[in-house]
Amino acid sequence: MRRTVLAIWIGCLLLVGCDVLDRIEPNDGTVRFDNAPAVVRDRVALPACGAERVRPGVDPNVAGRRCLWSAYQERRAAEFVSTQWSIEGDPITSIYRVLPGGAVEVFIDSTQDVWSARTWLRLACPGLSLIEGAPGQPAFGPGLGSQPGGECKETTIQ
Image 1 (tube, rainbow, N blue to C red):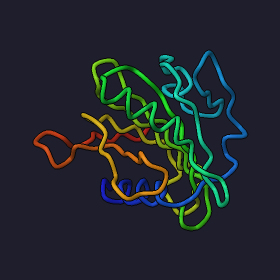
Image 2 (image 1 turned 30 degrees about the horizontal axis):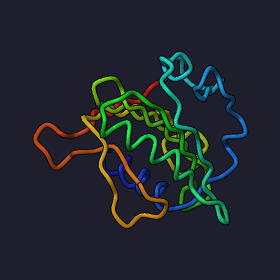
Image 3 (image 1 turned 30 degrees about the vertical axis):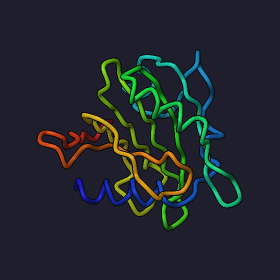
Image 4 (image 1 turned 45 degrees about the horizontal axis):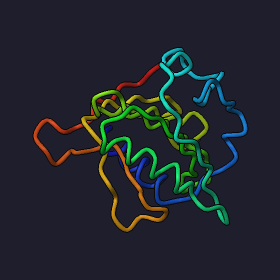
């Protein structure tokens, strides 16, 4: 299951997004998902680094990505939302959250991806990993999996 989620996540990062962010609204500096599970809707607001909808002809939000990466490196709380398309063209949204102290939480909405389990996942990770060579640098993902104790804990949320 972890490999599947990681493959989906990496595929999303390298591919392009869609218009799914049209259904979310700002809420006191955060992005809100009205149809998400309570743990996502009621998450603690963190300083917002923005959002992106990466799709053909639309550049990623590099300033937002830099904001989150900088917050992670400085162990400051921050949130960044990225919506990208799966290989089949379905939207997958990831909410990256750098928590106070530097741990990372990622909520992944694959409910509109018909080739997935169509669930919300929560990854609790010890950190972020930089993905060299991916478009829209800095490109990052949940990680530090190569370090002892560095794997993310994955939970399906309702």
